[in-house]
Length: 126
Image (cartoon, rainbow, N blue to C red; front, side):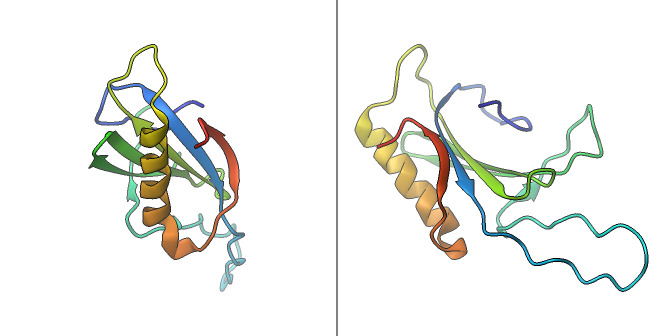
């Protein structure tokens, strides 16, 4: 899974999740023209400009957790998906099952306001 934007950590992604978001309501248009771009699903997501393509709207949140760095990423070009990454200093090895379980719990705690979200893809699964 390619990472969107630039993380402040150079550690590799050792675990990731793709969560399917509920469909957003259609925007109400008061004037003619294209609809406004969608807003991020969580208030904690902050804009993360892409230097090579200023039109892209990527929003991210990073937080240090016990096992590394938790990163949530949302791309307005694909508004139905929220990606979560665990970045940790493990090179050429898989995280232990207890780290994966803590990562899933940390993600669930951050996205709990959105309700239960179906998992579209994950590596590894607890």
